[in-house]
Image 1 (cartoon, rainbow, N blue to C red):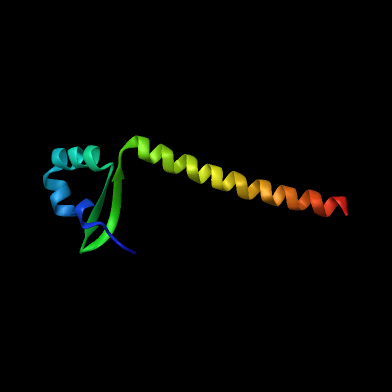
Image 2 (cartoon, rainbow, N blue to C red):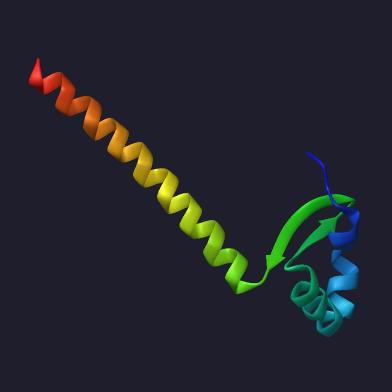
Length: 77
């Protein structure tokens, strides 16, 4: 996994500087919170969250439709 260090901060910095952290999220759209030098959390703006959630729903829908199409083909035999 590749971590963009420009978007990463320690959990200590997060706790001490919440207002600055939220400003960084506004500017960068996402921020990775590090704990013991490992990625632990991601904070993102709501628009990015909605975009990702929509993409996942579309992917799941596509998968379900493929299974449905396959089942119809099997029934047509």
